[in-house]
Image (cartoon, helix red, strand yellow):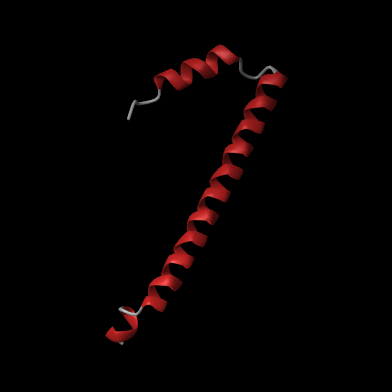
Length: 64
């Protein structure tokens, strides 16, 4: 088994799987951000919230 883990084929398969996992995570993150943007736009259009309120909320977020 240690011979297989140190083989180049194992590293290639692991790298391909890692790339697919990263692509999947990014794809779902983008989809999530689009949903948030749509919900915020609907709230603004319905008059539930206003742009200055959203701006204030972002300014109050903790700074990393």
